[in-house]
Image (tube, rainbow, N blue to C red):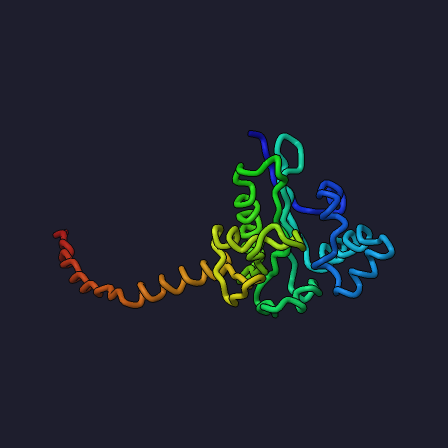
Length: 218
C-alpha cells in the first residue's frame, strides 16, 4: 500500500482534520483558548502557533499519507511552547524532553500500523536533533473529552514508560539516545580497550656483519 510521511508545515496544515485545525487545547492557555473559541479565531491561532514553532524551533509534526490521502498526524513541541502543559495535574514536563501533544489516525485507516509509524518518525526526527527524551500526557480513559490527548495504553505499546501516575492523565516518557552520545560511547569504549592492550617492543635486530673490503694487488 502506497504511503509516505512528511513534516507538518503551513502548506499542508490544511490536510489535518478540521477538528484538529480548530483545536487549540494545547496551544493556548485555557482562558485564551476560550476567548478564541468565542471569537471564532481558533484556526488562525493554530496556524500562528505552528508558524512560530517552525520559525523558532523547527519541525513540530508529521503527517502520513496513504494513497495520497492524509491518514494520520502527530504534533510535538518544546514544553515551554505548550501553555496547557502547565495546567496538567501530572506536570511539569521535564526540562530535557520534548512534549508529544497529539497523535491520531483517521478511522478509515485504523489497524494499518500508522500510529506506530508516526511514533517512529518522531523518534527519528528528535534523535537526529539531539533531543534526550519525549514525554506525553496520556489519556487513561479514551473516548472522553478532550479527544486530542493520546491514549496512555498506546503510548506504552510504542515504548513510553509512566513517570508520574494519575487515574486520568498520567505522564509518560521515552528516553532517546542521540547519535552524538552513541559516537562518544563508542570512542570511549575504544579508548578503554586500547588502554588495556600492551604491545610488546620487539628487540632490535643485530646489525648485519660487514664484509671486509678486498685489496687488489697492483
